[in-house]
Length: 180
Image 1: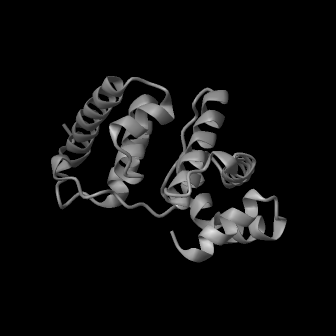
Image 2: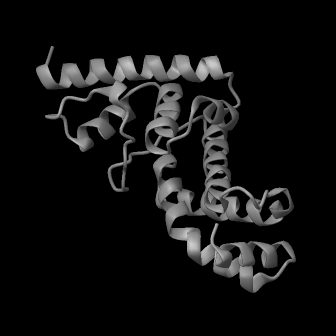
């Protein structure tokens, strides 16, 4: 972690609002983009992001300075979004307006003729329990232990949902490509 971030975190732990505002300014755009991947509209995403920052600032004493602050904050933001989804009966969001980076995992083997947009649209069509695991795995880069912790499910369930989601995604993309 950079010395500047380290300093801002230490000052924020002391309750210094100026440091908290600087941390917010440094990370708000990235955390808003992440919130938008999970929530239906920008206002809900903004609310979740702000709630997540509030949770982070209130729990800074639990933050381990040896870990990456951005990753710690990102986990809080994603958990806040998932909590909001659960409260709303797990409504999903369209990802088409937000940047998407799919991790380079050879096991997925998407046909090169399939666009990133087609993959995003297909992800939105599969069961929500699979969507969440796929988004956390492919887009956020979390492993099964982290996904299980975030979603409060067993690791085995995370693996199963990813495998089934992958199959559903492949089948959906195959049907859309060949129309069969």
